[in-house]
Length: 341
Image 1 (tube, rainbow, N blue to C red):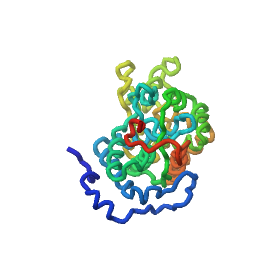
Image 2: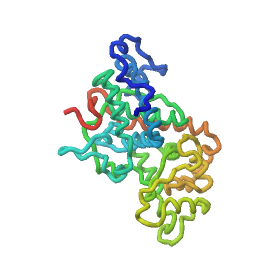
Image 3: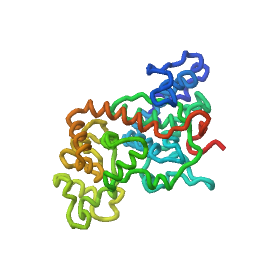
Image 4: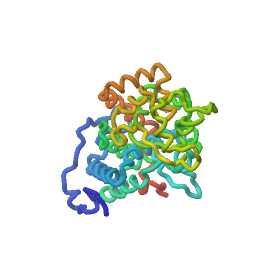
């Protein structure tokens, strides 16, 4: 049985289109980043914010891991460049005879989730305003809503992106940051997208919610770099529980451990407290304490949750604007899993 508080399909279309449009309270005009406005769909699809809010709420109610999954889905879309585009919904495309999608790239396969939630939102949006709202804009709004509903900050999302026409599995394999690569490599990948080292520290804070599969960190628990001992950067107090979740055998590789055990589903600054206490789960997370710039930010965010929320909102807005398609570039997909033709 569905637990939706709101089902768009139950509202007659004549009722929707007779109501006055809902206009965003955010400023309009050219937009801070130049490609669109916060109220881009205020007249063409006025109920878009309501649809996204209610569908994301339903998805999280049915699966409390979905908030983190939607946030990650947005990140993995924006960080893969297809020629010149970044945030273009390329991650949503299924494989075809003519196109090899990104869903089966190593960082995404059996890992990235939430496709069906975006499909559901898109279907509801299409009922209200056909061929009007791009899948990539829906993805950006859903990620924001997932954070807000988990107790995190709100940020204005500029709209008007268009969907890409192709995908790039090779780029997904090479451009997405890995949980086991050095901080300098991860920082270089961020800089290549127009972000900076502060964004590395801030956006890593998304790991305050969600889970990681054991294979992404198990090397830290038993035989770190061939020493036969655990990673010395991991506080020994965290070992017993992690070793019980992830026994030293291949069958435990897909077991899940919370990224932040103190507040698994709540978006807060606990992630940074964990790093200060040397209990960060992923090696790439704990590595933030090994660089003077990122370590200073980690300490600041661990002490000031409001500073983290404010900076996270800014960095998410930046990330959501990587390589967007506008104007006549790309298209407005009717179905997010495939291009229109």
